[in-house]
Amino acid sequence: MQSAVKVLIAEDEPNALAGLAELISGWGYHTETARDGQEAWEKAVKWDPAIVVTDLKMPRMDGMGLLAKLAEGGEGLSSNMAVVVLTAMGSIQLAVEAMKIGAYDFLQKPVDATRLKTILANAARQRETAIQLEVARRRLRETGVLGSLVGSSKQMKEIFGLIEQIAPSNVPVLITGESGTGKELVARTLHDLSPRKGRPFVAVNCAAIPETLIESEIFGHEKGAFTGAMERRAGCFELASGGTLLLDEIGEMPSGTQAKLLRVLEERKFRRLGARNEQDADVRVLAATNRDPKNAVAEGHLRADLYYRLNVFNINMPPLREHLDDLPPMVEAMVLEMNQKHGRKVSGVAASMLDRLMAYTWPGNARELRNTIERAVILCPDGTPLDAGHLPQGFGREQAVGTAALDGNSITVPVGVTVDEAERLLILRTLEATGQNKTRAAEILGVSLKTLHNKLKGYSRNQKEH
Image (cartoon, rainbow, N blue to C red; front, top):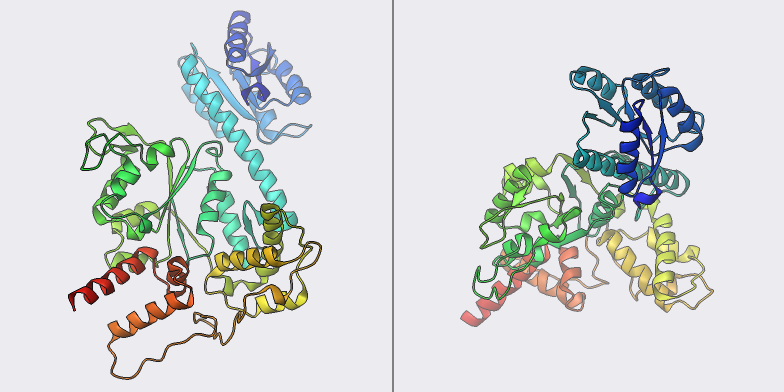
């Protein structure tokens, strides 16, 4: 990738110029040289480099003058050009002034090759990110799509704007919202629009991992660290090195593990279970929860100090029922996706089906919509549109706004039944209605999968005792 990155070097001292050109081209960059600021400006206009490395003291036009003209842009110059200034000892104040008017970074002479290589690599990645963001903004303006997210409602536009702002940074983000609202899609979009795009994206569901294994899953372990640890294993922080780690259902993480995670976020280091030495944590951490985070803190599920550390930015995904205007373009995008996934040629969506979809309140949110569209695409003959006949039998029947529809199923709880017993009946009836699909049942009930598993274990234990 570096072979396509163009670097223009401006330096009036011939030996220094030749040395820099040889060094930078040796790292795989395409280089061009200029002997003063005026020549550099003329070549920049014709060549449009990604990065300009310039000395500050030069004849005809000095580095500050060149920087000022480049900052103005125009004349076919890229708006994402990065300028690195070289300064002699004692000229730090001048370099600081250069940063104020748009320089990407500065480096003292004699040039530290390792530091220069790092600066160039970072500048190239930042430029690539800026280009990706511009492409994403153009696609958003034209189609209402940002990454894998679709929508043009006021709520979604606000979310897209926030994602664009914070994606290039390295700050933690807490993503909240009901199950199925697209929290992982937000995390993936943040990753895809960041300088970490080419590195791993790792998502781990804290609710799906047994308490005894969660630390090992996240931090890794050495051979013999605990009973059953037969070999060394890398954890999520190592697997996501250089990339992004999403900790889903963060409120289900044990308190002790939350404390260790907080230390990693603050010190940028972690240690495998059973290891002596720490490792650097070059990972951007994103977290998600379907709970109200403030309630989770108040109830003791989420440590307050970890919440404040993660909640630098909060993206709250609205339930689908609150932005149904986005449903038609979401369905259109999902039909295209499912056609490609299953090799189908469904031609669109009939008005009759769209009316049915718009009249439903979607307790499972966008995930439920995706599953519904996927099923319909598989059933629909090629070359024809989806219609209401491709919906599940009983779809949306007897559904009241804000309640969980169970395809016409219901329970009756007589007066005198305890709250615990009513909860047990509701859970078991919901599981029956979903064909024992625990993930779907947890979504309808508004609890995490881990909570549902714990409830079922408790019922099983009580049965054995009696």
